[in-house]
Amino acid sequence: MHEVSERKKLAIVGCGAITREHLKVSRMMDSMDLVALCDVDKDALARMSREGGVARTYTDFSKMLETEDLSIVSILTPPQFHAPMAVAAIEKGINVLLEKPLTITSGEAELILKALQKTGVKLTVDYNALFSQVMIKAMDLVRQAAIGEVLGMEVRMLQTKDDAMAVNQKHWCHKIPGGRFGEMLAHPVYLLQAILGDTLESATVLAQKRGAYDWMRYDELCVLLSGRKGIGRIYASFNAPRLTYQVDIFGTQKILSIDLLNQTLVILGYRTSSRTDSAKDCFDISRQLIFQTIKNTFFFLRRERGQDALRRVYTSLLDGIDARRELVVSPDMAYHTVKIVEEICRAM
Image (cartoon, rainbow, N blue to C red; front, top):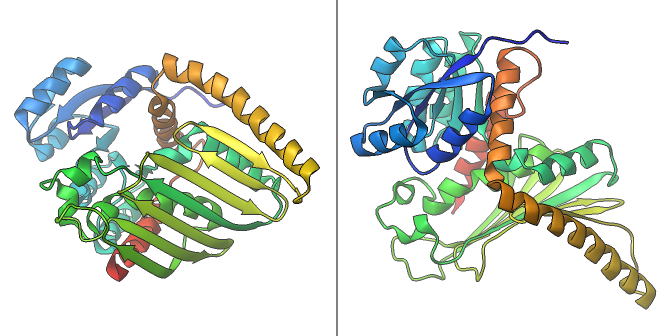
């Protein structure tokens, strides 16, 4: 049994839409208190202050670090600002949670790693899909060798043409390497890392322009990667008819088919092309989906799906701070994510 640690004082930097999820989760956590908010946008800051019931607000990040006695700072700004803010917090001995990605460039990421080497503070990145219930179950099955030896993995991340970031020509994502892909690629990459190993190498990068937005150089992307434990594939689109976030993990004995939006996991075993196997397979897949769909429908109606995953992200950081467990998303893993995304964007 571990002794109950003292409550941690949390500050949030950045008051965009994602901040609402962090406000909700901070109220769920009995091991930390949200004490301050920071943003250069005074209107956004005032709005989040009212919504979160947080009295102390700052427009100057450095002043907040000097004034507040913080245990954790959550940096939810666009990633261009992650490195200087994270380094400043680390040098003050404050633990850090960053929204993905760690940074835009590997050079910026190296600055953070160097700062961490000089202190005992912890830093993690919100790789929220890794903390979803179905991915936790899938990774447990892989660790237990329940699917046999891993052969490979595929991630499909499809967006419709009315994706909010893609539509907005002035969104910051269009100014970074890879544009909208540069913003979103961390998600499929870290999922592949979790199964195939951190140090993936991109083998083939294919990109096309199919949509009507002139400010997007490419809107279709296919990437093949090689990892220590198998071959990975990413397919991403901003022209799809429906939002899709699908992961398939291929083993020598079974296949895991994961729908991250609907939070379903279908386990596919051996089958042949016989009519009997086809009938059995249809029944088995339907049985798995019906049970999970009923369960998930009640869950989604009762609670927003992202909150449980985000709560697990914070729990991982708190456990790391109190030396109960290793971080699920380590700074080294996050650094390799940046390097892989950087390599893909350079090849586009």
